[in-house]
Every structure is written in structure tokens, then in C-alpha cells.
Image (tube, rainbow, N blue to C red):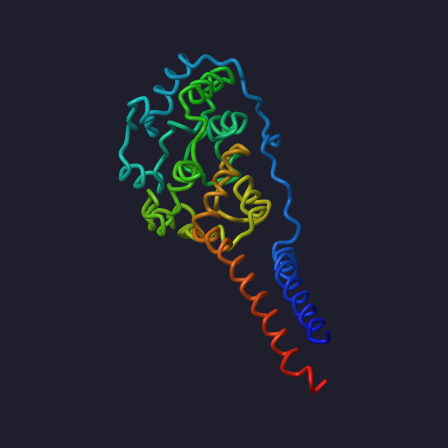
Length: 278
């Protein structure tokens, strides 16, 4: 009986260490993580929700197509990637699905003033102050009308992050050259292959939503993703960081069962051998 008590004490210590110490360490290292705001209420401009997509396409061609492509509409960018890097130190993204992954209030404010919306004063895109609120509403309506709104986490990561970040374990390379990224951001952004293992889910969601709230002074701009897009992206990062987790968890049940049976047999053997001595 004494041995069983010792075993139970050891089990409790191990469980407390596994489920107690690690979360506590995260809380000490990261502190209190603020809740993300997926409504982006800090931004001043309200979006015009009844915009005209047809008019928005014309405005896009006049004001945006010089740098941005829309591949699904067969609209090429006015400059190639190398010219863009030479001019801005970053490759402007294709906007085929931007209306499906970025929250519309953020998108409207971003078009008007990218530096304010992203909270990054050196953001490469210039403000579009020449556009009225109604015209911005038309562009937002157009981008929303053509976007695929049911994208996978992998696609969201590629569209929202791969201009600057690589994921080498998934054979995803950053679209912008490292030297240009260093000139633009001050350093080369990290590879995201194992970020889902290095950072907890709550931290990643808040960081993507508003990097400055958890890492003041960071050069990563705010992306403006919707809640659904952010959660899908973080889920994907978590999955690729530890692709064999589910298989390992299934196997662990059998391993624990084996150890319990072995412990029972060992205890029974001990009782049989030592019963006459006691």
C-alpha cells in the first residue's frame, strides 16, 4: 500500500509540472495579453457598405493597378517584383482575395491611410487621400465581391504573410528578398515553420491582430485580418509546427496503458515474492 501511495504522489507531481508550470511560465514571460479587437474601432473612418463594385473596379484600375495585381481577374500589376523591390523594398501583394480575409473597416481605413491603419509609419504604400469615402467604399465593395471567402489557413498565410515571411519546412519562400526586407523593416522577419510551437495560440492571435500591443516597437505592421481568418492562420501555424502531434497523442494512450499494466504486474509480482517475509 505504501508503494501505491508513493506512485500516486509521483503522478500528481508530474501532472502539476506538465499542466501547471508551463502555463505559469508563459504567463510570467508574456504577462497579461490584451484581447484582440477584430472590429478595429480605433480607426476613425466608417466604411461605406453600399458601394458599387463596378465603379470600384474602375477606381482600382486607375489608382491601385500600378502596383497591385488581381490574378483571378487577369489584372496584372503595372510593375514587376524586381522593380517593386527596388522602389519600395517590398513586393506589393496580389489582391484577389484581400476582401475575404481583411475586415472591411480596416480595409477602408488602410486605403485612405496605410500608415495609420497598420500602425507602421514607414509602411511602403502611400496614403490615397485623393479618394473620397464613397470611392473607397466602391473599391472595398469590388474587392469583397471577387474574393473567395472560404480560404484555408495555408492560403491565408500565403496571402497575408509570405511577402515577408518564409516557411521553409513547407517550402514557402518569402516573395521579397532578405536584403530588401532588412532595408524596409530593419531586420529579416523570422521563418514561421515552428512559430506555432514557440508561441501559444492566444499570443499569436493577439500579435497578428495588433503587433504593437504585445511587442511594442516591432516593425511588423497590423494586418487587419478578420477573426475567422486569424484563427484559421493560427490553426495552420500550430499544425505545421508539430505535424505528428495527433499521431503521437493517439500512441501515448497505448503507452500509458502499457505502463499501467506493467506497474500492476510488477506490484503483483512483488506481493507474491515478498508475502512470506511480511
